[in-house]
Image 1: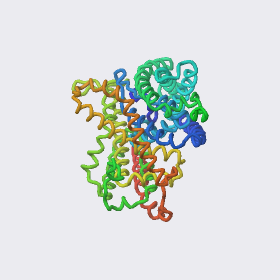
Image 2 (image 1 turned 180 degrees about the horizontal axis):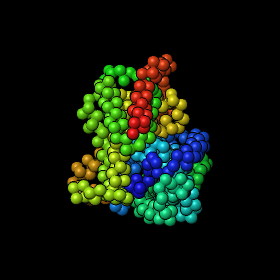
Image 3 (image 1 turned 120 degrees about the vertical axis):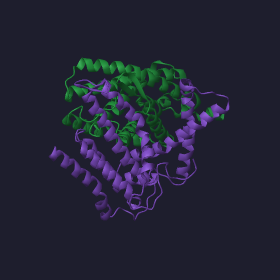
Image 4 (image 1 turned 60 degrees about the vertical axis):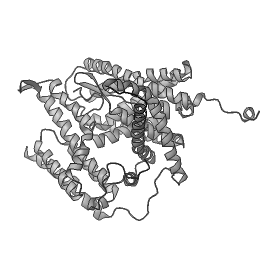
Length: 231
Length: 254
């Protein structure tokens, strides 16, 4: 059943595998909570909330990619660039949990699978790519936009392949794995391009006007030397 | 903005459900949703039972049915997706009014529609009887890590900020002679999405700084005395217990 391209519904992957992934997701989120405490300062707290609200709004846009197959934006890469990997993963998870409880979007028993794919795999892939690409590309709004675009496309496809792995471990119906893998990857390249465009325009605007808000650029910022300012 | 601190879904009534402690209501709705979700979609009359429970609850909470149904249209975009399923599904097919529909797809569509609607109605009732502050307070008392409640607090608060700012920008475009036609609005939206984000951030930052300057430390201040008494837990347990009863009865009888 491809109709809910991203959110896995109840009963598609069997119970034991779902339970294993719930444990996995909770363990990784615990690490994120622990790591995020150090990150969450005066500037990042409202940003994290806004990023979550933004992702929430953006996930409501469902693309009709192919007949019967739709998907939506994930926002993991956007979160990684603006609030960092730990808080970013928490933002996406918060959105997923609220959507699952309030809108029954994605099965409650599949919440571990969905968090693993979209909040953990997607943001992890996005973060690694962003960190790598920013070493090569210029640290300008344009370079950051290009980074956001590439990282979005790849992270969405990686997240979709997470489903293929889970399906291989505990799928309940009999479908050929290469076929699922191909369909998921093909669909999600298209979703990724849409997501990449939105992420790139947003991030480029923020980097142009308020570069101090971009988490991914923090490492490259030169510390202000007081003597120079005084002179 | 600036109009009060209740969210748009809150309905100010002096009902019995309004006075329940928030953590009690959250747990009850959560358990109810779990029971609904794990019910196999083919046990049709179990879903009728759940709908009846919701109706009784709405009457107890003095939330008018029309108010509830009007707000339940929020799920329409999600349900529209389900309409496609019977046409796109695989497997055995039935003929209906000259249309070839997949049985598996029909069940899938019913599954999404029934569970989605019941989930939305239950959460709407929670939202109608609980203020935003109480919701967050309830989550906090349920020992949810404060990073999560903090993100969730700001997320809920900023959804309104985002929507308001999007509306303001649209009005600004309109008043400068912009003429939106069906699909071309998408272009203006795409161009404006970055500035929408920044405007909302700066508005949100002011909200946050105002909160910090009034003593916000990541947790909302809570009065020490009003923990939920056991009586309230017992009262609200009626909802999950009744729905579990229906689910078990449906499993035994069919």
